[in-house]
Structures are given as C-alpha cells and as structure tokens.
Amino acid sequence: MAEKLLEVAAAVLQRADGSFLLAQRPVDKICQGFWEFPGGKIEPGESPPQALRRELLEELGITALRIYPWLTRVFSYPHATVRLHFQKVVQWQGEPQSREAQAFVWQQPGATTVSPMLPANTFVLKALELPVQYGITNAAESGEQRSLDQLDVALSRGLRLVQVREKHLERPALKRYAQEVVERCHAHGAWAIVNSDAELAAEVRADGVHLPAVQLMDADTRPPGLRWCGASCHDRREIEKAEAIGVDFVVLGPVKPTMSHPHAKPLGWDRFHQIASGTSVPVYGLGGLRRDDIEDAWQSGAHGIAMQRGAWGS
Image (cartoon, rainbow, N blue to C red; front, top):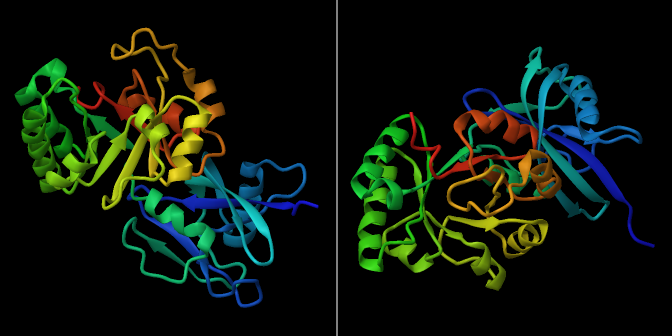
C-alpha cells in the first residue's frame, strides 16, 4: 500500500522590506529545535489558505489577510511523507506571538542566521532571494546604447535580476554587450544572467544562465558552476523537466499577446495558474506583461513577472 501523503500548509510571512518569519519547533514535537516556516496539517475539507489562516491564528495569534499560492514540495521524513503547500502571506492583522512556546525570528533573504532548518524547508530560502521582477534585454529593438541607458535607469529604480538575450549579436559583440550589462548590474548589487550560453556566462562573470525550452529538454543536468539557472517553459511537461534537472526558477508564457511571439496563443492567467499550480520552483509569468500585472501574477501562483519591454518603460 502506498504511503499516505500528509498535506501541510506552510506560511511565508513576508514584510515590506522582504524579511520573512521562521519559527523553531517546540521541544514536545517531532524534529524539536529545527527551524521552519510556520503552519501545520491541512484538515479534511480545508483548502491550503483556510488551513493556513487557522494555523497562524492558533500558533502566532495573527489573522492572515492576503495570501498568495507559491511553491509545493513533497518530502519524505523517516516518520512521514509530507506535501508542503508554501503560501506567501504579505498582510495580516496583529503581531506574531509565541502561543505554543516556540521561538521565532525575522530573517533577511540570503542572510539566514538560524539553524538547523527542517530539510523540506531549505529550498525555500534560495527561492526567497529571487526578485519579483526579471528584466530581459531588448537591444535588438532599441539599440545597444539606448538599452544600456534604460538598464541604468531600471537598476536605479530597483531592478535586481536581468537576462542578456540578444540573438541577433555575433559572439564577440554579444560578449562585449554582456560584459557591460554584468558590470552595470553588479555595480547596483543586481544579478545578470546570460541566455543559453553557460560558457559565455562564465567568461563575463555573470551570475547564471537561462535555458531556452529546446535546450532544457535536451539537458540531463543544469550547467555547473553558476549560482542561478533559469529555464523557459510553455507547459507542465517542460516545468517538470526543469524541476528534474534542478533549475532555480522558470518563466512560463506567453501570458498575454506579445510582439516577440505574435503567432503564439496566450495562456491567460487562468491557464497559467493551472500549469504553475503545485510546482516546486518559482515561476515567473512572461509575455506582454507590465509592472502593474504583478497582483494578477501573485494571485495566479507566480513568483513574479519577466518582461522584455515592460521592464524598461517609464
């Protein structure tokens, strides 16, 4: 008989400055002393958001007001196999209190100071480092110098993740352009990622590589030696392949009509949600999106939005 899955709701409480809450398991529970995202078992008849609201009220004395679906992961412990439904909670009523004798602490992405973490929770820490906006260069349309000027403006406004995607450039010109993008991103504390070419990414000291869907489906593992690996996906099969080779995030689209792929049928947010639901990697919506689409993206389970034109406008 197959082992029954224990369904669990887990809360990623996140304040406006990006900090998130971790709680320490009390001494009377399994895995005592380990740190985790607060939450608990989903009872029969409950949805993950309903369970999360109940658990947060019971454990921390707060009422969750805004909850977004995010990541899902199945993990096997010696005592049970759990399916964790990680949900972002960005607005709540009240201040967290220790109602079950548990310690809790606010942490910054990329600077976690407590340990040990429950093993099923550790992958979330890296996912939380990813910004919600992912800019994709568009020098083919705007010209190289103008695109670099637009990049400077976007970086000054807070853009922190940029992909160099310039299929029209020959490799020497692409290398020069990519080096410019990397230097400007690093000067602002941002990450730069190169499309499709892991060797070029290493040469220009970029932070990662982004795999097109065809390259993803041919890969047996993620390219080594780079901090970030993203991938382009159009359906659930491609997302499952991305999960299998260990990418850090994917983009899924097109969500809306886009000039880049005028003949592609848009998914729309409902179909996007159906495909992205239950994934264990952060998913960015892509295709015809602007910054004001972020609320629809979050409600549909997206980590954020990727933009080739929308990232560089006013």
